[in-house]
Length: 165
Image (cartoon, rainbow, N blue to C red; front, top):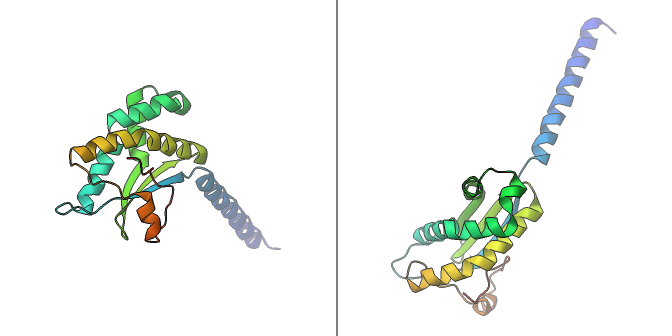
C-alpha cells in the first residue's frame, strides 16, 4: 500500500476512536429521569400555565427542598459545600410540565444516577402533599382529581401523587 492510503486509513481510524470515545462519554454522563404525574381539577379563571407555574414554585420552595436534601443527605452525597448549593442544583434538575391531555402535571427529576432520581422524587412525594394541601386551602392551586376518578375515565397513571392530598 502507498503512504497516502495508509495515512487516510490511520486518520479514519483515529477519528473513529475519538468519535466513539466522545459518544461513550456522552452516554455514561447523561442524566437519567424519574417521573411523577398527577391530575388536577380544572378551575374557572385559572389557566393551566398558571397552575404549572404555581406547582413549580411550590416544588422548588426552600421548605420542600431543604427537607429532601436533609432526608437524603444530598449535600454529602453530591460533595457540595452547602445546602444552598444543593438547592440550586436541585432547582436546575427539577422540571414541572403540563401534559397537553387531561390537565395532568408532570414532575421530572434528572440525575446521573437513576436510583437517586427515584429516591428524590419519592421523598418529594412524601413531603409535597402537606404543602400542596395548604396551597389548595389558600386557593393558590386547584385540588387534585381523586385517583378513583382517574381510573374511571381511562387516563393513565404514571406514579401519581397519592389522592390523600
